[in-house]
Image (cartoon, rainbow, N blue to C red):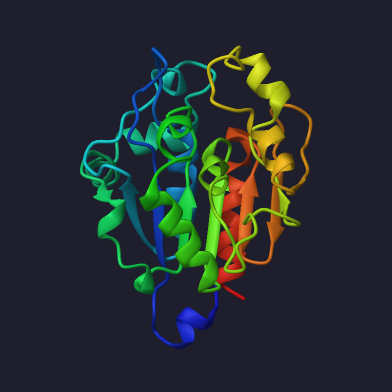
Length: 235
């Protein structure tokens, strides 16, 4: 792959951002591991530097269901046996400590833990708005776009207003029977904020790209979401 980074002998710096929350209203949760593992390897294979951060820093909780049969994908299995990757996940950087001037893209991973600490975190808001205002890539998959719901463009309007976006579909939330547990339904919230929401059928891959904003619908979209980020950074 040839890119502006190759020609300048500069390696793109990516920060994967995961939840610090292990519980949502009594429901055990955390990071959906597929949504970090697949992007992690996509970015590593592209030759990028990859860090892992979270609102609180330190160990990132993993949603046990994402390790269960039928959900535990090959990249996730590889990651769980990857000493370097697990080391980064166990000692994640505190989001507030990151100098975003050195970062080329942020990627918000999903899991229902994000419903606790992505929508009201000042550090998450700062990360999104700083990167977006600088014309850098802001990506999010599944429940990761929860991070976008509190954010604004430099002109003060909602960040997703008039933007092509996707995220965990309301019918998918109902399918996992957590519609009464989440603080809001993500599809409905993105539409309420003026986003031009698009989706595929439940549990099918869907990625939306609007400028430097990249969003993926569900766990099935994590790899394609990362590929879209790589495409932007390599252009």
